[in-house]
Amino acid sequence: MVLLFFSSSASAQVDWVLGENQAGSRITVNAAGVVSAPPDVFFLDVSVTMQDLDFEKIQADVSKRCGQVVKAAKAFKLDPARTLTRDYSIAPNRDNGQKLISYRVSQQFRFALSDLNQAEALTTAVLRAGATSVDSIQFTVADTDELWEQAREKAVENAVKRAGRMAKAAGATLGTVKSISDQGNQVLNLGCAWSPSDRTPTSSDGAELAEGDHVFFVPPTAVKFQVNVQASFSLAEE
Picture 1 (spheres, rainbow, N blue to C red):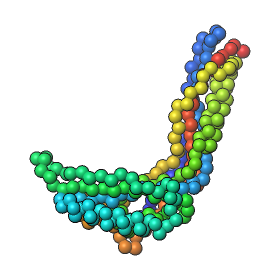
Picture 2 (picture 1 turned 180 degrees about the vertical axis):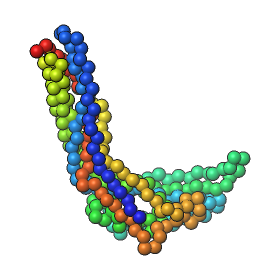
Picture 3 (picture 1 turned 90 degrees about the vertical axis):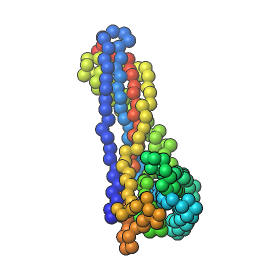
């Protein structure tokens, strides 16, 4: 089974509005700034989800399977600050006549690794131990504050450059900046989720990774962080 992980970049969109050739005319641009950094942490979100009409039995089965998953994960050097137990849920399932047909019990975990070379082995181990689904995987950067600031600075620089070029093309001179607003940010990579093809979350025994099977990843060489800004500048005739 192959898991693919891609990292991609999106082109920046530039919009502009040019007012009349008089005092107070403005040009407004939307621009983006992107910075890259190699990933240094791997996040794996998995679940143990099972169903059965016998409530006590299903709770015991989920608890046992969760213990096996956690034990398998602890064999790796996890990042303790970012590894945690997530949602635990119990939900009754009823038919159209509102008759109780089963209980659905689910427990979620997030495991974090700083050694990215162990990502495949960790995922394989927890699936073999009894996790019924991989909810998400992510190769990313743990500390991103400085990266976002650098991307924001680049976005503003790009806005100034593009506004200047467009003003010149329109026969005007770029004046002072009148406003800058943050239009949001995004991480430019793609994650993927995978679970065994024969997974049967509605059965009481769940499904495990087939014996001898294992997971493969193609991680990104870099994670890209994009900040979008909108900036307005005054204009003067050349």
